[in-house]
Image 1 (tube, rainbow, N blue to C red):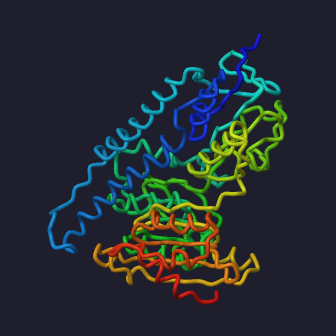
Image 2 (cartoon, rainbow, N blue to C red; image 1 turned 90 degrees about the horizontal axis):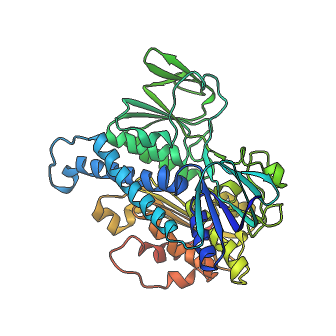
Image 3 (cartoon, rainbow, N blue to C red; image 1 turned 90 degrees about the vertical axis):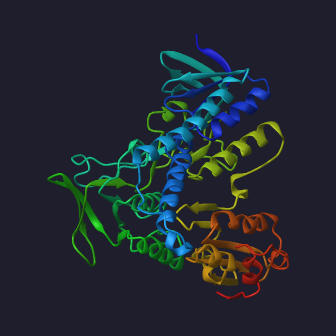
Length: 457
């Protein structure tokens, strides 16, 4: 006989444990199944460890700039083993706290193992069968491995295996010039590696506006990262102890050669071994589970949250999925995925904070759009800090005066963008923040000035 539960949660990423806490509060007997590591990508090989490494890289880089600030720090020695230990300690703190949190849930049982649907509302795990009227999927995604020539013959790294690296690659070749690839590129260049980024598209960050992509490229190139775009028909091969990425590019040498290769070309949902067909759960051609506006799948009583539903590839969207599910189930609060505004960051230094529409999306919407743009060199706080790279850009609906989008590429841009994001959620006219009196000297004080200089797009 199968074991009966009120609810089963598959996956202990960002949405799963939070939902378990709410199920526990409601007094529902629940099972949380995790086959690998508590916390999923964010805690173990995503946000927390990479931003910890980025902080170490920033400190090392700042020390080399002592002359810019009037001091000399001497020769900087990067200790990769110590950097990894620091990263591991930060990760362990988070995972231990999560384990303690789950362990304190009175009505939740944690089960380690691979979960698979054996039928509607029935889960098989380690020889056990579990049943529940409500099942929540939170299995996340992993680094995609492209089907390119030589990929099975050459050792490569992904964002997950990079977390085990405790040495400095002499020359790191990164295949993929988007968010993950660029964060690792700047980080390892600051640690002292030679770095080459290879991107098959005509520009880095293909989803971003051309001016944003161009300035990001300039920022990383100023630090010595080599960029190869328009790189089509890539192949991997060994050349003695080195690895070669063969290219067919519009310009430059036909190969990029290095000691190590990092593949950063996208994500693959962890759904192929879940038995979705047995449960009547529909997925798209890439394996992402199809959901409605409240995270419901095609199977009654089954929800999918987080990266596996294809509605957001971020920790904050996964957590919001949990909030949407809980609000609809327990609070009679009809929250929806379509209510949220796209927002994310690229955590290079200086960072890019993005909210709402890009220029291309605003133009496509058919609206009459106003745009404001200011270089960070005009911001007093940025000059004082010696951090003048980048710019601010905002988009406004000329008719409603509502903010449509923002790109803050510069000092503290990943934080400053939230004031604009909050205005978008409030649906207030841009004049509200334009007339606000911001503190001097700060970076964000330029936002009212920027909004006072809008021009037609």
